[in-house]
Length: 158
Ligand code: MG
Image (cartoon, rainbow, N blue to C red; front, side, top):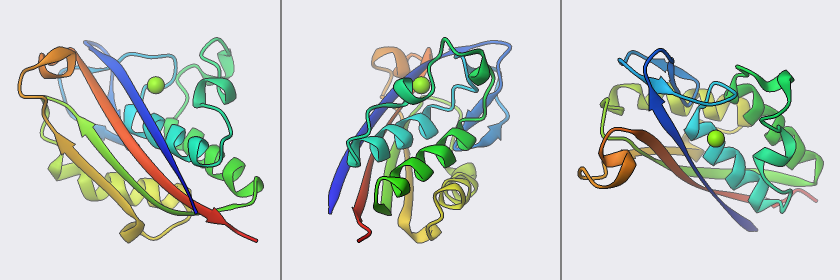
């Protein structure tokens, strides 16, 4: 059994959609980035890649590559899952925390879990998405950014 860790942060800007866990969340700002900037999917991707020691999301999907401009990070997460399986691992579970001062994420939790479990090909009960504020501290706390941490567990499929 192997464990991986992932972290990401993206800046909140006006005129962008807020996509978290593949869910388009109504908000007056969204996350800036080359792809759809889905910080949750990015953290989960890096956790899975980390568990399999396959590098990081930036290596596999460079933000200089026009192919990934506006890309769905949920689709990229599906590709990451394929890479992890191809390397001989079975995805066991994922646990993530999104750090955002606003909006409230609880109403979107089930949809985010369902999306992530769907692309990973695992049960929804094996995916945990938690949310917290940063109590007004640092960039996430000031509402300037949304961050996410994730851990993933894989096991040798052989
Ligand atoms: Mg990112």
